[in-house]
Amino acid sequence: MTGKLTVADEAWIATALLHKEYPDRKDFTKKEIVQRAARIADPAPLRPGVGHHISSHAVAQKPPQPGKHCLLFETARGRRRLFRPGDPRHPDRRGRCLPERDRLPVAYRSLIDWYHTVYAARPDDAPPDPILGLRGVGGALWADEGADAYVARLREGWS
Image (cartoon, rainbow, N blue to C red; front, side):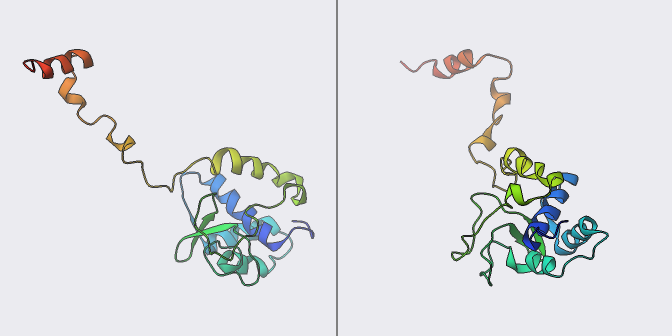
């Protein structure tokens, strides 16, 4: 990383990289994120503030102390994922939800595009839509006839 990169941005980058590397996982332990951040920082030692941001400073639901970033979201005790638009947050947290693209090293700027086009556009943590969940229910009732014929058969004798 560069000296100009904030520890909050390091925490976000590490979490974003984990999401890209393991797209089938919805969240990660704090330890996994810290370990991923350490691999990014290598050969320099990981700055201690990165762990603090992963634990609380950048977590949307936690009271701000002192930062107000909403970079990460706590899915369960000790587990985090990237914050998405629409996630609940502490009412006093109104800080940024993404690193500033121009402040990131060039190698990580594509993560911002990935976040907008892939990650934030994928509501995989949202509860399933109950209406769309009914798709296909009752299909066996009219499997051998067309929809119009099925409705006509149901309406026989309605006069």
